[in-house]
Length: 259
Image 1: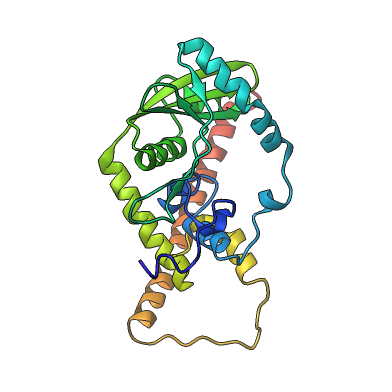
Image 2: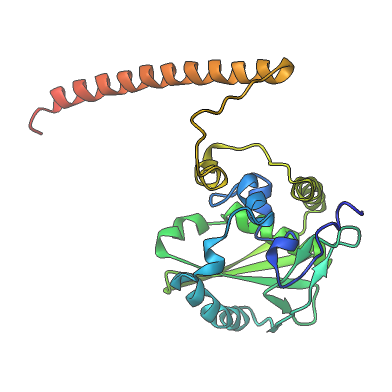
């Protein structure tokens, strides 16, 4: 616990706790961030541009939040109200949740979203973007509620809402991942980089030491050599696949002629 609390929790500073919007990236299931990206922000090594400059889509989303919540109330007959409390895990205070709305008289909550018309297909049928499922699951687990609703305004023209039932097994897995991740933050240890980390790595290492050299030994040397070999094999395979695609394209164009 002493290690976990090394960075004092401040509900007003997102760098001092793990919230619901962090969890998809920490779980490796976010399209917008990665474990390393979240780590770099929490440790203060990079600045989140959204903290400095608020894009219009974010400010509009905040302004539309009450409209979407009231639309949900009208459509479902469920009264909603704000709940500004800080919900924390009983054993790990750095695991925190801030919910959009509580459903009055129930153990249910509401998460409000807005998105562009281009995102409509992500909400077809029973589909819910998995980032939002994880976010709501986090809120349910930390509040002790059993059901969550997601209400979304799509492109300013279409309104839908969907249910998310609490899954204790999934929530427990999220807690384990979050605690492990917070250990990386407290010990200043970088999580393993993945394919989407190019921008973060550039910010972490903005300059090159042209005279620098790194020597690996033992298992590290074996691991690095294996990665280099795998990379070379991957590049060769990519070239061969691209050549095959180009060959097929050429044959198709020839068959189509001017058609």
